Image (cartoon, rainbow, N blue to C red; front, side, top):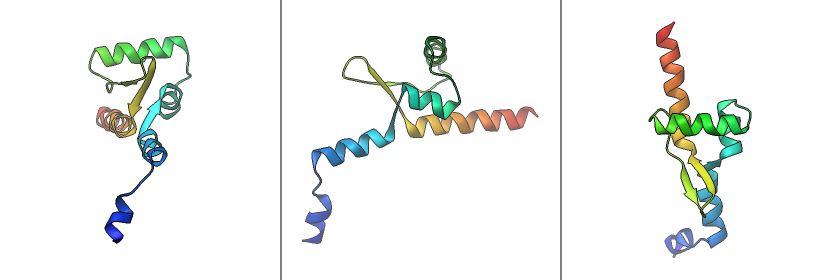
Length: 86
């Protein structure tokens, strides 16, 4: 019976869990330390097209999100590359 209670979640709880893993454009800029401008959006798009930045996830047509895990991995790879270059 306890297992059945653990599995039961509402739709809003599931959506909240998914959105806590996904980061929108402004959140992505905050994580990367960039100002959310049109040039930043273009910069991120160019980085993604050249396979240097994680692929975004489209939700609802115009909404773009990134997986938080992918952004963290991207940042750690930048930090390790920077440490090796010194």
